[in-house]
Length: 161
Ligand SMILES: Nc1c(C(=O)O)ncn1[C@@H]1O[C@H](COP(=O)(O)O)[C@@H](O)[C@H]1O
Image (cartoon, rainbow, N blue to C red; front, side):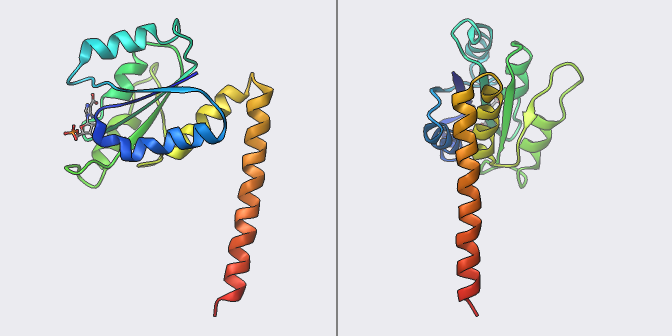
């Protein structure tokens, strides 16, 4: 249902966060290294066939001159969520953030925070949850879990000096 793509295997340490949350929410996904720069034809084939292959949302992570999310968005009308990745040679990640965020009118990419892979997975689930009550129910449970997390934090806080 969700396609997770990334510009390099070096992005996987961050993009694994997408897979983790999708597993938790029981949402099927596929994952693939695809690069606008290094494999442009593969990128176009991926984007153009995505809807036909049953994908509903694409999550694309890339660092540096991060053109992958925008170029994939240019070739499909599926929602594309972009994850800017702070790669080792990036200028504090601003290169990735701005090149994914600043899309021209007509071709949006829903950009999450730098390295915000988990939120990308949650946002994809929320998009799917619009038409899928089971997914929406799992998201509600996930949110309940956040409340418990904050209560646990408060217990810790009260115990500390
Ligand atoms: N931004 C892109 C694209 C693209 O946008 O097509 N392809 C690879 N990359 C990025 O280059 C960085 C370094 O990649 P390597 O570690 O393979 O040198 C990665 O963060 C990747 O996303």
